[in-house]
Every structure is written in C-alpha cells, then in structure tokens.
Length: 166
Image 1 (cartoon, rainbow, N blue to C red):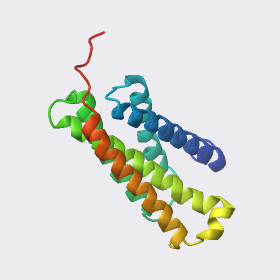
Image 2 (cartoon, rainbow, N blue to C red):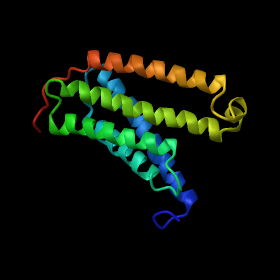
Image 3 (cartoon, rainbow, N blue to C red):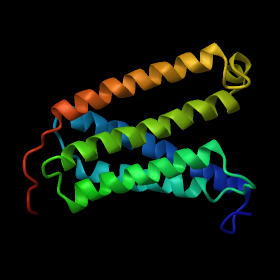
Image 4 (tube, one colour):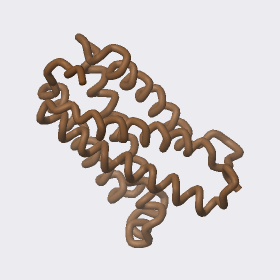
C-alpha cells in the first residue's frame, strides 16, 4: 500500500501524472519555439513534472535506484526553472535557466518513458531485454539528439515580451 492505495493504483496514478507532464511539456516546448509563454500549460507541466519525480520516491524500495537519481536531478533542475520563471521573471540569464531547465526536465521524463516502454511493452522488451542492446541505445540516442536540437532552438527563439499584468 502506498498512500492508502494499492501499489497498482498508485502506479497507474504515477503513470497518468507522468504522461500529462510529457504531453503538457511538449506543448510548452512548442510555445517556446514561437516565443509564447503559455502560462496555464506551463504551470500544469511544471506541477505534474514535480509530482512525477516526487511520486517516484514513494514506491517501495530498499536501495537507491537509477530512477531515484533521475528523480533527484529532475527536482533540482525544476527548482531552478521555477525560480527562474516565477522568482526572477525570466530576467536576463534567468530566461536561459528556465528554458534549459524546462527542456531538460521534459527530456528526463521522456528518457524514463523510453526506459519503461522497453521494460513493459513485450515487443520492445524482446528487442532489448537488458536495456543495453543496440535498439534501446539507438532510440535513446535519437531522443537525446532531438532534445538537444529542441533545447538549442528554444534558447534561440524564446524571447517573450514582458509579462502582462492582469
């Protein structure tokens, strides 16, 4: 039992939160490419990405796993992105901190999605049962290359105008 629910229910909740984080993160990244802030989408992305990492620590475990390291890195990166956006208002170099942090946090979510896909989807698992085979490595390399490209483009293009006071 985790937080009063079965492990299966908690796992399903964690997966749904993670998929929402990835979907909204892709919308936010697209917004960055067009210099759009998208405050609602951004808030959902950042909240669900934090929740993805936090809930990952709530699964039963007896030793530190690679997923815990990824989760810890994600939370540090997200803290900086949140500070840059909400604390520093994207002023000066904080814009780059926000963009790079957000794109990197999204990358970590997708990285874990690929890992979990190869573990849980039988057809993918047959291609790379240990996660060290060429198909797995090729997919992760393509994902990394796409996110490097996305990060570079987002840093170049995300120059939103001043925030409007509502």
